[in-house]
Image 1 (cartoon, rainbow, N blue to C red):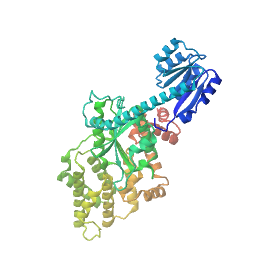
Image 2: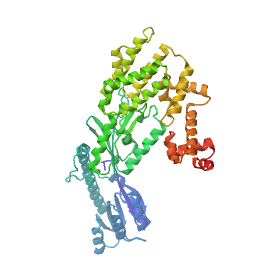
Image 3: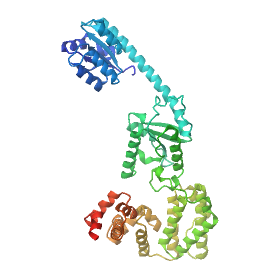
Image 4: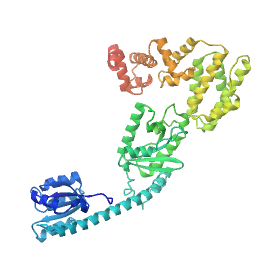
Length: 517
């Protein structure tokens, strides 16, 4: 409670004239109080205490439906910690004894003496303000002490029995660590912790510390995790919106854990994920613990022999003008790199080697062709400055398309046939126009228009048609479960698959299968 906050008062007396008299006997506001409500009986007073949570209750000892002493006892058992002043026309000592037992501050007899009431109010006012000051100081102390305690938990130190974690607001049923940083290194973004504070008045559901050069948020409790997941689902469904605070932030989310001593595990996973930003897709703003791949290839996979093998494959397909196989080889290369435990610098060095070998062979074999290659030093610098693997793969695709066009194949129909073949071979994967277009030397907008012109339908419609056609075959020829078929043909959400299938065939997958047998 600050110096300018009024102490909220509830008046409870079965006589309206007494309540009115209490309102005007003194200038409450000038004294620092505010009447927040009235009650005419004990049950109503109890209800108002629960609803309004006043700091002080002026209470008649004898009221209909519930006596003052019964009311005070019930309120205390329900957790009410405010102050009481008992008003009574009876001065029997037994009432005073009962009132004192339940922490009543003053027992005043009717008719109310103004000076006695003023004296009681001044005393209670000082008591409440001292308590508020103590609570404020304690909160400030806890706030300063909490950050080092949170850092110790993140680092993996065992919980200290001398620390009262519950009092610090750190004892919860579940936790999750989220590390955040700017999505773009060139422009400052909103602080994710500030967004959480703005969107939630009660900041008790998370802690924010700056540690190991990371901004770390510790989410606390199932409600916090539910709200966070809901926020992410909404963000993923709507996509990154220009100007949105979240559009400027990248999040790495560790797994949920259920004990204080496990918090560092979630933190370590979040750090691992942050180091894998290089492998993110375009406009991907979130990496979650369930996206951490099982490492299959070791650093030895990036040796000279592997570099020569990939460069020779790519060279062969380029010279055959086979864009489809060039794209397939690049995807194979990308998948291998995503499950390799080499660091990013090693991966970029490996990719530079592949590209420079292709460049050297093409320049030697087609010396008469005018191919605007960058210098080796410029290529190495360009790849070194790329922040994401997909950017390097896009550069490779663009360069290889440039080479194919320069050395002899200019047929747009041939390219489009390759694109259709690629879709029909890979519809079971996540396919987007934005990711396919660069592989064949187009931007996504142009390819989308070209697709509609040549096929008479949009890219997404064609993709759905390919997927549903295969699903139809699987329903007829196999005993696979519907959800298994949905996953196999590229639908991660089985409900969405049901919706698409019914729209196409006028019945559910199960109904369709039943009719075929």
